[in-house]
Length: 415
Image 1: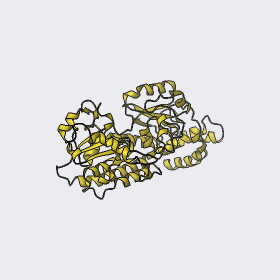
Image 2: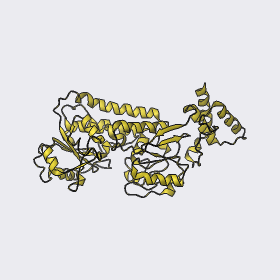
Image 3: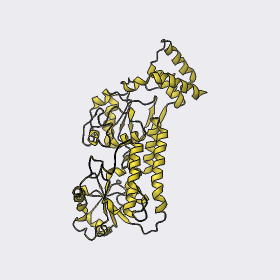
Image 4: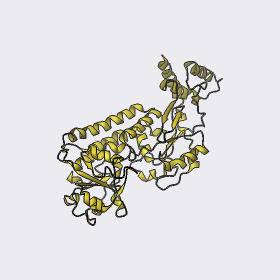
């Protein structure tokens, strides 16, 4: 009976309140609307707010009674809380309608959860990614992005209810600034980059986003898809003996200043293992970070069977990168001084992979590409591009044809 009453109220009130979704929100008091202050909205409290409103005699606005109806019907009359990446308890009193994600990774998750209609502002460099974020690139920019400066007046002026900032310490100043100039705005520390956390931790962030955005069913659909992708690989990897390829993952754009790789703290390590490979740097530098540096001599000594080069040269583009562009990146490894006798170089098993394959909710298709690089015979019937295309169409709602707009593995013909 409780839910039925709430549903009726939602249909009546929220239908008439639809224009409010596109209008600036007011600075809400941090309490459940129409509640007496004990953070438990009862049927009597809701009815006592709605009836006076309908008679034009109450103290509550249409926004108040509409949000209260939603809280009563879908939140069981209670507030919502989560623990964010900075281990802070964050409380939500109303359904969210206006949000600003200060991270393209969080933006991608929000789109996976079919909640982009709630986004009212985006970071500055999102406009540079017009192919992938085509429908969001024209939203108001709040600055930031790689090396950019945030426009705090613009952020506050867009009147968001919630701003998502990175969870790492480097964003402490950003979070503190927003909270100091706009106390009514809720700041959530959550990166969702996937690169900096384990799969179960990352999935917990996605689950929390689904929870606070009222998109729990969509989060479940995403998890099901990710599991289906990984299961196709897992079944065959389990048939392998201990004779698995030894893999070195690196970022050739840093050579020769740095030889960056990944250890067991990094999610790319998880992707390598799930795809049937052995990460030769699994135990390097685990006391510092998930992306340690090694030296050239160490790589030569380890003699990896396969080298995976992460690069942003291959990505979503209006056209495919040229052969020359991709070979220029690959040649950094193939012709690197002293590496000519490394097994991976000798056997021509050096592959370029798009770094985006391991970021945000893309990560479910990354292992499929790796599996084909590691063992094209065993995974002969696996089609990474088809999984990738399904992700783009089904979860990102994008009209991108991977046969025409970008490359994500090179050389493709060898896998």
